[in-house]
View 1 (cartoon, rainbow, N blue to C red):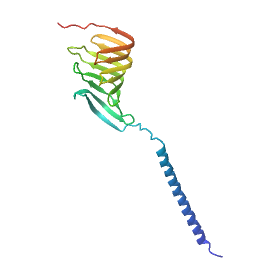
View 2 (cartoon, rainbow, N blue to C red):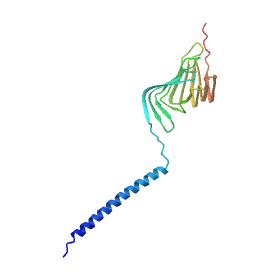
View 3 (cartoon, rainbow, N blue to C red):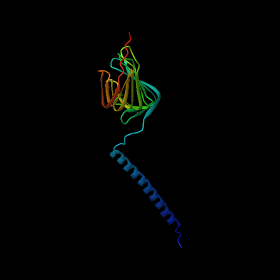
Length: 199
């Protein structure tokens, strides 16, 4: 009887080599197909922030080199998909040449469109102290769009305005501080208190 051991060992070695070659070939094929799929399919947009800053102070300058506004907050996150910023507990000081700084606060805000739009959300308060030429001004609403470069404020929501002792309520406001224009779209109610003249 002949010894069949060398033949079985040779067959076993050939089978192991073929199985290893098939496994490596399969891995290579899967990698080639994955790369081709990645090249064909569009990249998914990144939705998470790429950086964040805590306790920041951002100053936007005007064309004349003077500060237009400065924005502070407890945290700011940048979203690269639309180049926007999410701000927690924002406080914005808007500066004008003929009036005291106006302070805007809310619980959160987004800054968009190359820092020219500030959307303030949740418990929005605006306060401008009195001056020799203007009365104390306050505004309350749930949402406000500020366009600092144009000196415009807009909201489709309900607002409460106080100017001195006068109170005005309405829905849908547009206020242009540069031109002095102001409008409320509807549901307007108010109480007018004449300004007290100082002798």
